[in-house]
Length: 314
Image (cartoon, rainbow, N blue to C red):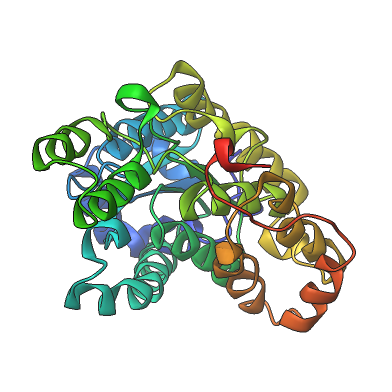
């Protein structure tokens, strides 16, 4: 895997005697002499403990780094920010949510391009860091893979975050006691993972997979599962294939194939938030995306989101 053809970016940063200072700094963070001849793969982690969607991402990033190193690449992990829609909505903080998508994309692009990574793995699980990762992949247009953080497990009596919203409404209408509301609040979200329904995160995970930016089945795995860890470990095979075949996100962003990712979530009765990912990412590659074109395509199909919860499907 060594050589300029497999290291088009990192070779500009670390090759040659004149780059001795750069190599010296990298020795200090764990590089061996042999690592400088390997492709450098960035691991863009969206870890934070401010939301269950991302609280486990550091473990997935570690698995992704192991996969990269096992495939004879050199992994370098870095972080970016997250704003939680579910926590900030209904408060002034929600004004920062959509904007954070661009900040996330900018930060990943800055690190990957600034450090000369030959490819990267982006791991996200929240409403805005997922499209932020995909936008960065499109802008940089170098070998990259998205890993979905995975969906959360159901809470008590198969509750999820929407159960809490519904309980608030029931309490406000006098149909639920405060004690019952507190019980639902405390037992609906049991641990790590994205909101457990076809809401924004799982919708976008399906669309990202349909775009070809993540591995098959990445959108369907639980956050805390052996399958999700394997999803992280095996991404390096995709990256190595991309290096050899010079595959990049632009390969998947032709105008015609964009119809599939925008429509593929429809049979799942999901939200129209798929446009948060299906349009902004390809548009970074100047692809001709038109909302009316998608609407005409959707009119050909009898599917439309009735309700985000499976038990509401008629």
